Amino acid sequence: MFAKGKRKRENPAPAASECRKRAIFAARRPVSAAAIFAKSRMRKSRAVPSAPAAPESKFFRESTMELLRVENLCKTYGEGENLVKALDGVSFSVEKREFVAVIGPSGSGKSTLLHILGGVDRPTSGKVFLDGADVYSRTDEQLAVFRRRQVGLIYQFYNLIPVLTVTENITLPVRLDGREVNPERLKELITVLKLNGRENHLPNQLSGGQQQRVSIGRALMNAPAVVLADEPTGNLDSVNSQEIVSLLKESNRKYGQTLIVITHDENIALQAGRILAIEDGKIKRDERLRG
Ligand SMILES: Nc1ncnc2c1ncn2[C@@H]1O[C@H](COP(=O)(O)OP(=O)(O)OP(=O)(O)O)[C@@H](O)[C@H]1O
Ligand SMILES: [Mg+2]
Image (cartoon, rainbow, N blue to C red; front, side, top):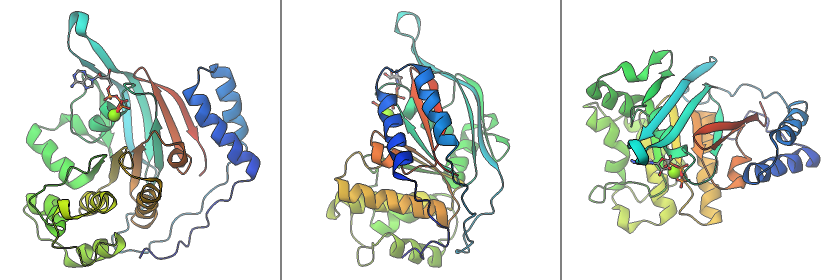
């Protein structure tokens, strides 16, 4: 039930869209960096500036530039012969309201990056700033509050609490925070997520798509600054996948939330405004598709 977008959607010319598809495929093939960046330059020249989204909801967040900054992030696991460099000097920044797709081969460090962005796992070195605040200068207790209030995490296998109902799962972060549930927001989310009539169902009484919609509700309930999704459609068929992506895009537009989505699905990556390609723990490509 998201209101129709006031923001004009870009309709890229067929040539530009083809170009993007080739770039994604390029990310999966061993192609020279020069070729990738040549294509990237061509796309940049066709970039269409996007209009700011309208403040349609009272939960709308004001838009101002940088939300997230990552400086020289490194994460290693194990030691000696078993040492794995999961992230190796990753730096980038993300603006408020951006929709970023993170792509890369299995084991390249995508989930590690997302967990560090979300305050789930401390980096070995490097810094993460959210809204100008140094995330890892916090104690573990402060980090737990940060995760509940400022980050919405969505996983491939939903991670719902099996003994809690739809409503209880969605409102969990608010209740864990010892705060009152905003009934208006809950009602709006249930409607938007098409979960009306399912409020008292348990997760095992729901389809995969419905369970993922509940996990989106849980991620959005606290109106976090950033929504981080790790292969949110990895367990769904193509129809449900597109529905989930549409919901995430609408929440990005309607609530002004910054959205970072890991995906192996090129159709999803191509719907983002920007693609970060990761390989061997490093950013190999950072490309704006629009906006
Ligand atoms: N807890 C851990 N202990 C040891 N090594 C780990 C741990 N977590 C991740 N790794 C290693 O770090 C590297 C990056 O893992 P990560 O899960 O971030 O990859 P990914 O890009 O998300 O892969 P996939 O697409 O398969 O989910 C891999 O080599 C992985 O084996
Ligand atoms: Mg992963």
